[in-house]
Length: 192
Image (cartoon, rainbow, N blue to C red; front, side, top):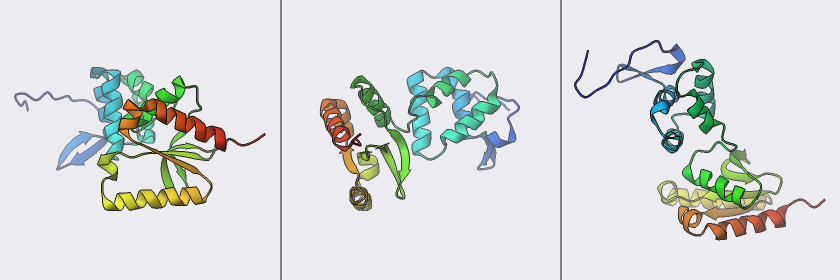
């Protein structure tokens, strides 16, 4: 059936890459990212992956499994490049931190690491330094504010240094964030 203004595609899709939404068969989020990859710029694809992760529609494992099944399809190389970034991240803020740290020649953290029952935005495990991103979209409620403070207190009690940053600091005052991070890493580095 053709619908004016709607472009459809047909083809065999592995069972693990299909979903039924409102009675309509659609591809999984990871497969959709793969199908979109050839028509997006690298930045658009990275943003699409970020949004899918923020909405908890897809994980790195989902994308990896889809890529493993894809063979030599168009879009595989582009999506793999996003997945194979040295620090696969869920957000533009995390990608910005990677670039800032690289430019400052500081060690890269683990992103979205788990510690003490918490998921951390960035963790330098050996140095016991944590960096958390405070975005208004995800931290503007009273409950989020309380959870963030409890998380910081728990981590500090366990001997971690907790740094918090905002998008404004990342983009407009990045030198201050790099300096605070370098200082925290230097002070917390294990003595040989």
